[in-house]
Length: 319
Image (cartoon, rainbow, N blue to C red; front, side):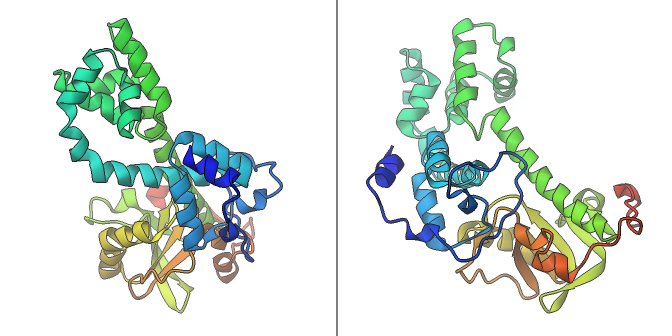
């Protein structure tokens, strides 16, 4: 792997050492025993460091290599690897689909889905989906097969789909479930933080019938932070690089500001700190460490004593 060769050759990695050490908690992995493991959970990152990691995270194997040899947290590396794969897949999807007849011929000639996917640097799950659709397998049936290969009658096809599910850590059912779980984890952290302060709020689920676009939490009473009152908080269980943040501004943060006023977005895995992301006026970008004990927002909005806090069910939080 090129990433391995670059590091083993002693490539300059000056972007790895920063003065500030912010540490968002992680629910998926144990802290790395590597002596530089403090790097792994830092929430803020220079753009050059992010780009360096992004360029090296070509495969799932690169996640383990960088975690073991550079001290980064595996979940953070998985988040950045996922960004790279999803963006590349989106960019190349139709170009690959235009080749599906040739790919299907390769599969019928004996190559496996995973081999074909590796040769074209494309997710195995989507490669198998395209090929089988070309073979007249309905999309819904494919997803039933890949979710539960025991439903596949043909032994060879069953083995190949099992191999696809193991090889694809992003688009397989297990990979998709982990991404969903990561999102729910971020929302749970935000809900817990608000509950500890007895701040009443409505969730996206509560708001969905009333509004077309909804933040994760709309506060009944705004909190004071960064020079303005924040009426909503959006949770992002990802890393905020310029591409990610621009997309979120366009699709979510600007509409939220127009509908609800000033707000706050938290990137639990951090964001690039040396870039002017130009959020909408009145919107603050925060990293996960700001919500930790002693973090800036937690200090500005302290939690109540345990005997004062009353946590009510979501359906009863705000009328």
